[in-house]
Length: 188
Image 1 (spheres, rainbow, N blue to C red):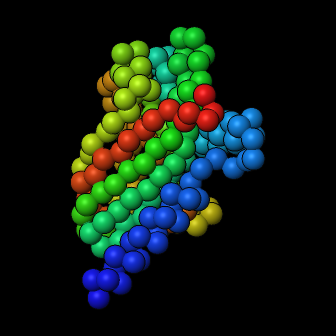
Image 2: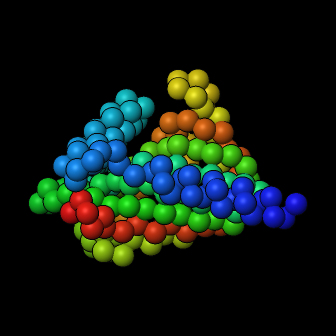
């Protein structure tokens, strides 16, 4: 039985890592795919929370990431891609991300993460080091426009404000995990 779980987790992890990159054959096509994902995600955020448009415009910068995450019993993981914009000079930094988690849960979730950086120091630290460790709970059941998700966003003034938009998936989990964000050497 333990071997079955190990094989399932390994195959699911490989699927997530392989399927979570920007689409396209050339770096220009991949950059355009990321930019389109960013515009779509921001449009959804602005529609759901109109005040965020002003938060992003007044911030030091912001990041938009597409993530696919899976949790099977005690182990979870995910990967994705995105972009960080420095509002001071307009610099675009294309990035990748991966995450791992230990805890109880089951499910797969496709979501967008919008990170607002209110501090230039925190923005630059994120771009160059990109670590995050967190304790989180998650509940979502969504397919297309049907279903819902628990909003785990923070609506308070801090150096970093994060919003998540669930695209699709079913997940119920409580875990301790970490995420690593890093510059995409092929797209920058």
